[in-house]
Length: 73
Image (tube, rainbow, N blue to C red):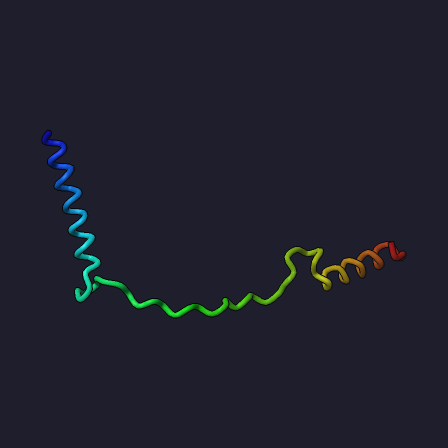
């Protein structure tokens, strides 16, 4: 029985605190003005994800391969 009374009091306190926080005209309470929408995020500059995506790397690799073997493959 005592547990039920404590539970009802706890629920009542939570409800009162929530109402006080949402009360208009109180500092920090009430509905807030909506934030302006954000613009699109700037994308980072496009860059190769892996070495085999980088054309400069592939040219250098091809140049090294030709220099080492003396043949194109």
